[in-house]
Length: 327
Image 1 (cartoon, rainbow, N blue to C red):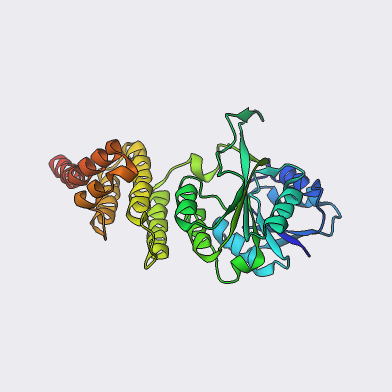
Image 2: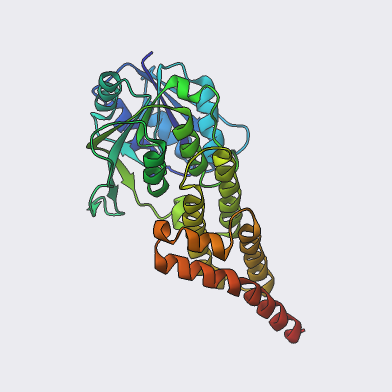
């Protein structure tokens, strides 16, 4: 068995059929496809069975409880028999030459991880904008360069992996954004990465995806994921470590301030602000560190983060004061 394809699915009854058909249409045929039903409450399972038909290369594995994307992928990894591993999200699809192109690149370059480009598809099925940027075609071993790239595009689903990469690595379970810490673990574990500028994946911009909705759980999960990233970098001699952490944290800040005013109670707002302040108080999150890496993150972001550092306690105080006055 050359390649194992892992597809978790949950609430994707409108997409799972197209996803499976794109796998069945692959020009490279030596594969197994493991579909993990993560306790999907809709008709995804029925649609998957219908799309698979009598194709023996496909196998459905049932979860007894919902473990989210990371847990479902781990289940797939435990059952995979292929020499190479590929992940496909159940609401996306492949061009029919995905496996053939990626496998050929992997063999010819002798890389452990191959990365390709993808195109964004809107709700009407049209291509939106340009495909994602990527490093020039070639083989890379520079950890710093790879980290800088994957910080912007931390995806695990546009890659083909040598099986050995996943011997000890697993995704965090029961949380959103499981790709983020896992990508950096892969960077440190694998030694050679190959990039191809071919566009081989259709990424659907659907309204029900994790990135299109926001909740308090997603905030706390981002904090959890950030702690996992810090643990991954601990003890590694990577000069951009503080810059990487600050840039990632700025994404959390942006998301929270873009959504925090949607909450109706002061207590929820105060809780979110406290969570942010806790992050800032840990390790290297202070104005001096931010200013010292201003060249890495840019002056505008540096000023905004320093201002935020000092205004967060004030914001918490004002929220509490307003709540007390109302009482």
